[in-house]
Amino acid sequence: MRFSRSSLAVAAVGLLLAAGCSNNGPGAQGTGGGSGGGDIKLLVLSQLQAASFSFPEIADGAQAAAASVNAAGGVNGHKIIVDVCNDQGDPNVAATCGRKAVQEGYSAVLNGVSLYAASYMPLLEAASVPAVGGSPLTPPDFTSPMSFPTNGGNPLDYGGAGYFSGKTGCKSTVLIRDTAAAVEETTKAMTTGAQLSGAPVQAVIKQAGTSTDFSAPVSQAVATNADCMLLAEQPAAVAKIVGSVRQSSKPTMPIYTNVAGFPAVLAKSLGPAANGVRVNSSQPLPTPQATPTFLADMQKYSPNAPVSTQSLLGWAGVQVIKQVGAKADGTDHTAILKALQSSTAVTIEGYPQTFNFSQPRTGQYPRIFATSNYGWEYRDGDYQPEFDGKPVDVSAVLG
Image 1 (tube, helix red, strand yellow):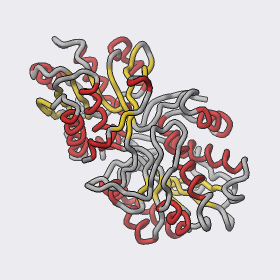
Image 2 (tube, helix red, strand yellow; image 1 turned 90 degrees about the vertical axis):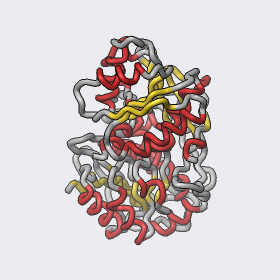
Image 3 (cartoon, one colour; image 1 turned 135 degrees about the horizontal axis):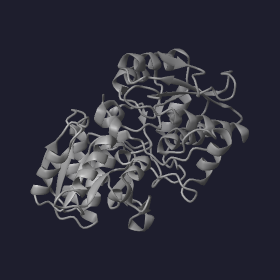
């Protein structure tokens, strides 16, 4: 099994904002061999393969979970069937995937990582098909009554990075962010988090994530005399910035970003320069201690797939369906939606809180149900837990 604790590069996803629908796509076969009556049919609608980024392991995680559930007798005797529709990072293809979910009678969509909820969520709303287990990145993820995400996405998790800066000793911060419009919400959340924790942002510096040289923005950031640095950039840019900081007049300046922006493979490529970078997430990092069942399912049913927060995201979506499906009056989308809407205590292995899907939040992020973040400091080739490995409630960053 290829073990990679790289994360949702949801950082890159939300920051870049930059027709593969099938029941049996390459490397992502349907689980259970069909879609007969009584099955709980799930459609993975996500960016599985595209030029900007690819997360095929989201489907692998979902399929491993379904195979495990089915091997144990299914959900009240009903199989979980997992099919896939790669949105290809294309809004038109995302809409095609949405139509597929509606027209072919899927019980729910598993929308792991997609930039184009605006293309498919209205279709799901019109047909009352729930979207479960996604990482919320765009406004429809935050607001649609069909949206049931299992992590905090950019608002909670980048807000958490800002919040953790003050909680670990920073008195002031400077923020370097991508120029993409999609980063406006990320920047706002990060700034709010830093302010709430006593480390207000002194300056916000913009630089395109595709730039090859970050020495100028780093020099500008260091010149502000802020204690610490916040990064809302895509992973390749984060690597360049970390390297540039280590060569600056403040080589030990603490750096904070979401784990999505600083995956293990990137951190390892930096060597000792990566030491001291702090990251956070509303998902656990897959480890034998935190996610033993997930690891066992991946080993048994998807042994060649990456073990990462992305495959965990797909696996987690099926865990939600397993729990709510056990209490549903049927297996179709209407029954699953009704069960989701009344679920008050959904648990997922390793995740820092239970999910109460029956009570949307007030404010601009009503469909973000996650509340807490884990924190880690990268040191000597691995992520070392902070806060004694316990989750911290960072929901205040959502307002």
